[in-house]
Length: 471
Image 1 (spheres, rainbow, N blue to C red):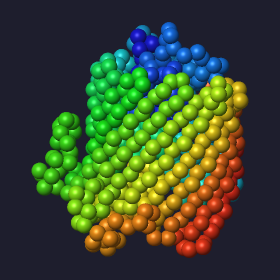
Image 2: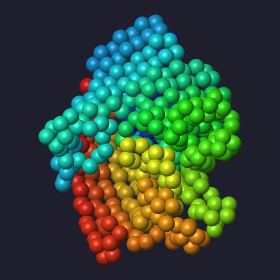
Image 3: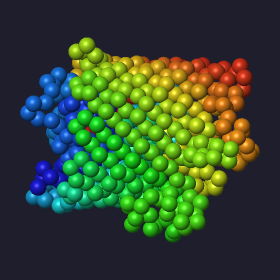
Image 4: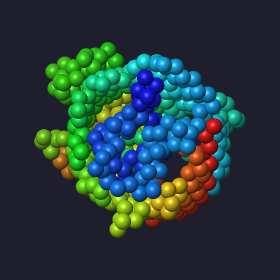
């Protein structure tokens, strides 16, 4: 029973496990994982291929141990462990310190506790962070503003019930949908957790999920998603509705097989509806291709409205020429007015940030990453990126921008004076023990037409050293 309890624990999105899952999946060591995250330990364990699987390198073995083995050197270093025949409780924590120039210090402790009773498991993280001059968005206001810049966050506080065919969850956690490693057009990695309730029906490789989130007093988000995960390919179909009517949206929870678009049309409501399709194709043990396509709105008559679309296409090549060098590249483009809606409280936003890809509308991005596992504990990573941002943003719909005919409904992409970002980043990371690590990162970014002002430029150098130590 203790083994079953351990497998039911979910792995939060900020866990270092997600840095290696895509790589292990591309090599064929993991199979059948859906592109909805976070995973449970059981999801990861059942995805490990045994028997005639691919040969494992030292780095592969090291990564697998950190993913699924419940020993101090692999994942957790809890301060307290209590175990019974059908229950357990674990209490631990960590200290994280980062010094970044020119933004100075960010430091603080976090307390983490997790466990389970029968089919129920729980997980929670509480964090205090001192950050006098840091541009990260926190989950709560500081206690005393600039006088005392201490932030209290609860990124995860969740209760799960996990059965062979049903998974029910409620509480708060960070969520992600889609195959894009850094980002995602529908539910991207956020610096905070979403308050939500959800259920997933699962059978073999098929999963059907319905998700309900409380965004604010007069704003709710409901999503349902179908996905199929085969050993060599994955497909996901999603539909999301953002509504300001907190009572009328409840029936959407109990109609999981109905299209929300037709339901709101028949009810004569004006909601914000988004559709998305994503796919992954695997060619083990060396190549992974992925793509995502988002439809916020499609103008059947282009003279009467704009297209509001987004897309990502990319690929990952691992163990190049039999080495521990991996490469990844992808391109994302999001059209003007995507995520925005004529009613401000139905924008696709939460606490001032886009729920989907934070690239934002009226923009595109090209990224390239080269990673080298020097030894299993040490990784060197180089990144390069180019972004273009037009003058559109998520807070203005086409009506706010005065679009009224074919020409103004379909402006150049990106539109107006284009802000261009060119940058590179290098990082070196050493894994000390379990999740504990030390890292050094250097970044240089040049911005042309800053603030959409012609010939305005800025150069942004940044150096950061971080230590994360579990206890």
